[in-house]
Length: 135
Image (tube, rainbow, N blue to C red):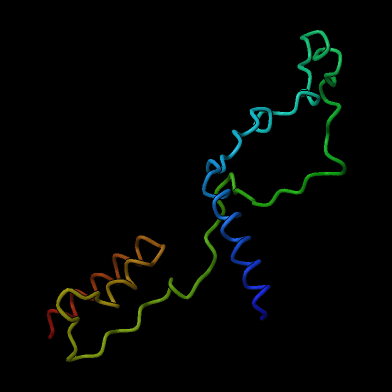
C-alpha cells in the first residue's frame, strides 16, 4: 500500500471511530403489540340459537346404518350339552414309584378333577386313593 492510502485510512478511522464512540448504543425497538394479538378480521364460528339448532336437527330413526349390522361376538344364552371329549375316559395311571414333587401338581389328580361327570370323577378319585395306599 502506498503512503497516501495508509494516511487516508488512518484519518478515516480516526474520524469515523470518534463518531462511532460518540453515538448512543443502538436500541431495539419495542415489539409491536398487535403482532401477538389474534387477527381482528377472522371471528370464530357463530353460535346457533336454540331455534336454529332445533330446525337443523334430524328426526329420530333417520340415521340408520346402511345394510345390516353383523354381530362380532356370539353369547350363548341357553345351556348346551357338553361336547364329548377324551377327558371323560379313565385317566392314565401315574407311573408306579414316582411321587408328585413337593408343591407340584399331581397330573392324575388333575385329570380326575377335569372329568365332567360327577360319578366318573368320584370313581377316579377313589381309584387314585386306592393306588396311593398300595405304594
